[in-house]
Image (tube, rainbow, N blue to C red; front, side, top):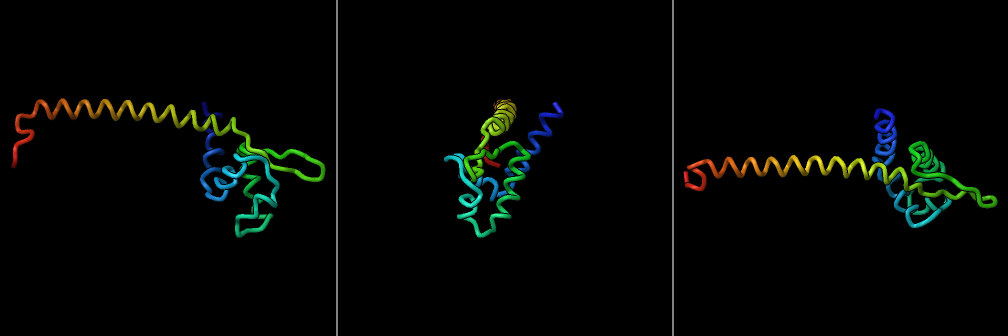
Length: 118
């Protein structure tokens, strides 16, 4: 379990930065070079490369070789693992919320002063 959480920590840490999230969104539309990824940002290709290294360490992005170019590709498996983790925890909290709501409704139904003006 600790290994999974460590991997999730890398994924969530990588996605915590808005520039890296924008890079992931761009790569969701297809592969792109560092230059193409840098275009919409007011930062250097070197800065984008640093963001890409964080995404690569989290295994969210990989680089392929196409002639002289090394396009970046989104690796969706890690995103799916993170989404699965979030979904499992969402279900747990939704269940707890439903039980709390039922408990509060039962308390309100048992309260003889409920609904009276004070």
